Length: 243
Ligand code: SAM
Image 1 (cartoon, rainbow, N blue to C red):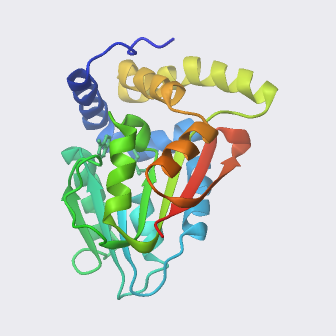
Image 2: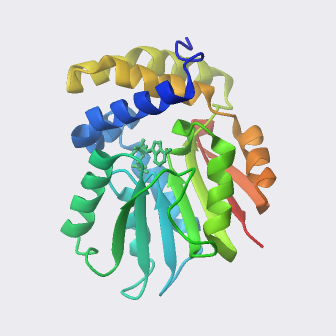
């Protein structure tokens, strides 16, 4: 299954860039197709646990087409500010287009291209740092977590939404069959690019499970780390605080 286990760091970065550049314009429709619309519910849960309010400063890493930034901005009022950052230019351009569309840019949002493992922001800058379905693409997950910790203000909250491990035995089997067969097929039919979707499935399998990921978050210095499973563990929402 894991065809890319042995690729070098540089190759992995190139591969991730290629995948997201090639899917950028069809990204939103593919999200809906592949998750059966469920990504909207997973994201809604992130919005509801975000400890933010009027005037908050929020950083959304691996922002992609901007769903998280747009959802969070609704809790922040006109004095809040959300920064979208992504490594990939074409994906961030989609995000910029959408935050302009909904009237957040200029004024309430910024789009800044940067690598999540080398963030272009000062220490203690944000009340909340979020990342949804992005960290599994990082070459160095721990370096990313250290950066999220660094840019958070003391008292700030970190929230991560990511694919995880199904915790129900039957779901496990169905999910495996679905993701290894259907996702690359849907990818091929809709975008003509089977390999990118094959890569996405494999990146999900390689990512640490709920407990191991929670341990990495604690290792980066976060306190009160906890997680909740959604859709039987297909997705997990982790959170922690910089004290
Ligand atoms: N957060 C958005 C959402 O939930 O709809 C987009 C998620 S998309 C699956 C993953 C994003 O991670 C892509 O936009 C990709 O460019 C970005 N990404 C991958 N590696 C990254 C890195 N090292 N630093 C920042 N962003 C990265």
